[in-house]
Figure 1 (cartoon, rainbow, N blue to C red):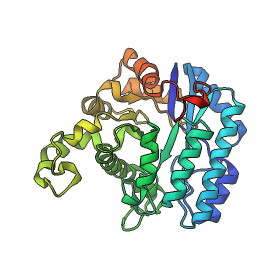
Figure 2: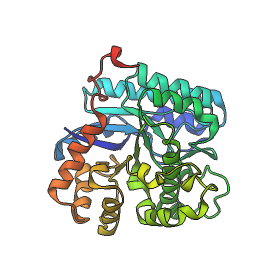
Figure 3: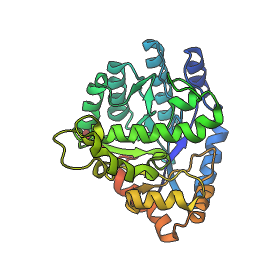
Figure 4: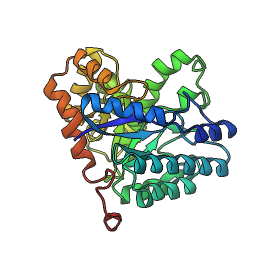
Amino acid sequence: MYIDVHAHHLPARYMDMLRAGGGPTFGVAHDDATLSKMIEGQDEIGIRLQILSTSANSPYLRDPGLADAAAREVNDAYKMVVDRYDGRFAAFGSVPLPHAGAAAAEAVRCLDELDFAGIHFGCSALGYSLDDPRFSEMWAELDRREAIIYVHPGGILCGTEPGLAGMEDAGIAVTIGSAAELATATLRLAALCRTHRRLHVIIGLLGGSLPFLLQRVVWLGNRFKGQSLLAAEGQDEPLVAELRRFSYDTNLLPDPAILASAREAYGIDRLVFGSDAPSFAPTVTARFMRDGGLSEQEIGEILGENCTKLFGERLPGSRAPSQIS
């Protein structure tokens, strides 16, 4: 079964709630016509379903009540889409960070009640990194459920993160900033997963700049032994080994250097298909992969086998409520 892990849906009411709460809004709202067009794009390449997330528009609002309401709004809207379109869409739920208790509760609701495929995160939340100790309850709940999490750039793209001079330039934020925040979030999550071994992590956009920097992480990490999560005291296994347990989606540009670096850094079996629909049709992303030097066999593995192994029975209609712990 061909699966697209990187697709977006931005309900109009949800985007209005983000604006009212002073939150991030990146892009325009979508409607039923957008979803129908996305299904046409699926059919062009044989994709069985796309997994929806909110792109850079996470419900990360300073007011806890507004954040919680926005998260519930978009998750309920996604549930309606999943049910209405008969298995053509699945969903990654959103949680109202940085409000830890509410985020943990909404994550549990998304997985246990709404039966979502996993949970979506931006790279940080209003200045808090994803591995901040205040989020320990949420990570414990997700680890207990062996949850899949999907990470997409967000803070820099929306200008919500403090202390990032120069990122007010939209072009720099999209081209450079998002790549840097993805690499940073991926390294921090790799360290987190040393103690949360049951999490399954998908990093968007091939991990940003990380494939190009992986050898630097290996070579220089030990210079900071005991001073950095790159080489923590008492950890014999290098952090790069944890990075190679993650999966990485292939939303990218047709640059052979990017794909070659990702293939070398992670292995072809760690790549999963991500189109960025509706911005890009899946056929466009597949063409980028071919232009980047991947064979048809490798593209088939990325579209099918790699995703199927990762998700197993987590997709719509494949789990009975009694199987959820």
